[in-house]
Length: 472
Image (cartoon, rainbow, N blue to C red; front, side):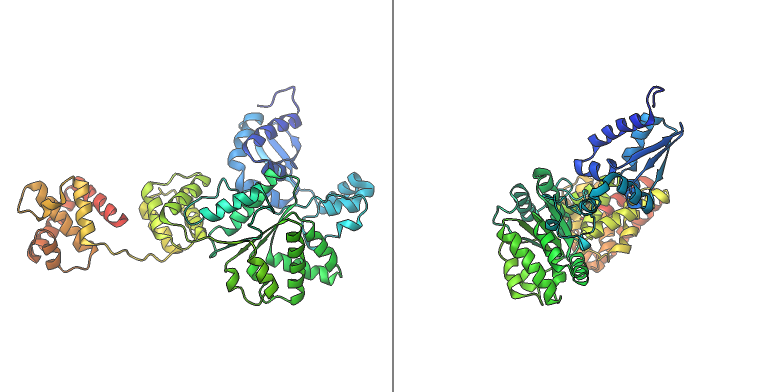
């Protein structure tokens, strides 16, 4: 809690020191370093942030970890308020701070590269600091590795260690939508920035690149645009397939940028939802260059990888999922990682806002909205095996003439579940379980139903076996 001898500004610096320990250097520099404490009246701490986007990002991503730090240093009853300066105020402050270097400052602080000037014509600038446009949340640490992406991830790490010096230049990452191409490409960029802070890394989508070039042409500055991109040490272009069908001038501009960077040993990383050979309406000379390095594919995650992804995403949402929910999601979500994220967010929201417990029943309700659940074929053989495993009896006993209570109950439960989950006729079920006839199966089903209605313990046991049958 704030001491009487300390100012709120000093206490805020203590908060920043603690925040810095819990975030990466990139996160801290981007989101927390610009924050300025404005006032503290003993109850409300008012902080000034550079933009509404910054406020939204911190509220969405950091409040759970920020709030305890605020409480620790300012008191448990402290409320947090934000202020964002107006554009006029920002302009006045920049003018006061920059003086005669205003033009240079605008270039250095430029966030949108659409109208950026050619830095070589500005006297005194030797090194231009280019905002990377990378998302600090996309890192190798939170990229879940599996058989579906192990090669691409390993190559990406090799590129991060020696950008522009490996055989993987360009690195062309392709795969269906939602498999993690953007995450991996940006993770490579983040790793390069950490290992080689002197390098200029820039991430941009092809759509944005096209819009920037169009603006540059309208402003009669296409050469400045090309010169700017040729200064970059690591260029990451997302969705390169969007270059298809574009004007030849745009493709020529990208060709000149690509050629210069590659010839000067700079690293290029491209992502696409198509193989290089499947791209159409792109100049042959560009397509040839896309194949110079390595084209690596991201495929659909396998079951084990999906389990790891689901648990990883749940941990980010600060939610603990029952194993049966994790396994159910992994078995039934086959499209991409975005579906997993959407389904998990919906599950957590339903549990939090409707005060519902996260169960397999709720998971099934939620998943119906996101994917079409195709009922799995459940065989008589799998039911036999599951029942015997749960009851701890030898499966061969089901076919024996023995009629002890334990064995009779195992047969009856097996027959009941076979009738519930298979389309086999009663005679076929009976033949598969001890060579019984259809009348015996009918009797078994009725006996199990009656016992479930009168014996709660028996009911719970059958429901548990039923869940295991459906999970396999």
